[in-house]
Image (cartoon, rainbow over all chains, first blue to last red; front, top):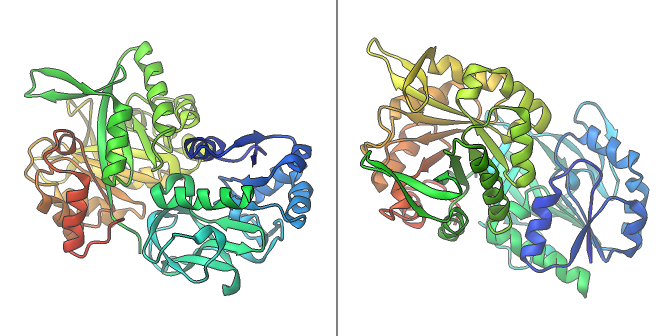
Amino acid sequence: MIHIVDYGAGNLFSVKNALDYLHIENKITANPADLAEADGIILPGVGAFRDAMTMLNGSGFTEEIKKQAAAGKPLLGICLGMQMLFEKGYEFGESDGLGLIPGCVQLIDGGGLKIPHMGWNDLTVLHDCALSADVADGDYVYFVHSYRAETSDEYISCYATYNEKIPGLVFRGNVYGAQFHPEKSGQVGMQILKNFAKLVTT
Amino acid sequence: MLAKRIIPCLDVRDGKVVKGVNFVGIKEVGDPVQCAIEYDRQGADEITFLDITATHEGRSTMIDVVRNTAKNVFVPLTVGGGIRTVDDFRELLRAGADKISVNSAAVRNPQLISEAADKFGSQCVVVAIDARRKAEGGFTVVVNGGRIDMQMDAIEWAKECERRGAGEILLTSMDTDGCKQGFDLELTDAISKVVNIPVIASGGCGTLDHFSEVFEKTGADAALAASLFHFKELTVQQVKEHLRMHNIPVRK
């Protein structure tokens, strides 16, 4: 059973709709203690880094997510949820993230391109990971964001190019993050969610 | 590279897809959820519902349509038509819409754009602008299907929408809409030059070349069409193949 973390900031229902459609067992969880029962965890997020971390801390999820990730449970952060996996964010001042993947979250340097980076962008596969199975160079996924992760290449599975390199799919051990919205990315996004579900059940 | 988007639009009344035929009336032509699924299958990058219902009962039917579509279609979903308040935004976003488009309510109360952007984020606030050419040059903003001229400069209004936090502009030319002679390139280019948010061109496409033209000759980020796709004159797939041949980046 995948638990979708409900800490007050997230597009929970679109993630739930996608998992339901794929017949992947899931539930929305508002109680941190319940994560002990989860086989996998999805951390969604929409909004600003600082506000979302404040809500995650306030709801008591921060320590529990770290604990479950350390125990080896598959974790997938989506959009802002992916950004929160990193050590620090710089949206509205510096704030601490979950620190599960080395790196920080900075404003995109669009170099004259429109910010937010919104729409379908193609991916380049840098390193294969469990979630990138059946994802190929040139596959398009749907992004909506103004900030991006700054991290070492070793943690980047796929990236998009938008003036600069935008980490799209990141990973470190059992921790995964998607900057784009797999739940809004058509077939490619559905494949990524299926790949995550495979980790959870095997 | 960011792909140019192709967006089919469905006009919905009382939970059914409708389309005006020869100005004689409105003809029901199908279930919006099934139509959205079909467009998704064809490769639509986004789906737009325009709710043309006037009644209160129709509104709640629309919420059900959005909810059912969101359970079956996994590309962004935009809903417009009759949205007046921040509560209307909330209700549709909760039902599964990703973006909400506002038109006359925003013209009459621009504060709605700022409030919705503050509450839900710019990414879900689309301002629909209906513009018409003025005899003396330039473009004016019209509402109520072109019946009321608001005496506002369309270019200035687009800038104000961006300043207030709109995430996107859905731009319809009332001069070209329904004529199938091509998008209004001059209007589309003028607006996309002055704002730094995506502009969706709408109104007037009738052929494949009209799609490549709007992307080659203007700064449009997306193109929207209703009847062309609805009456199966073209499929989204055909449009994308055509754009690909013109080296315009589109999603596979």
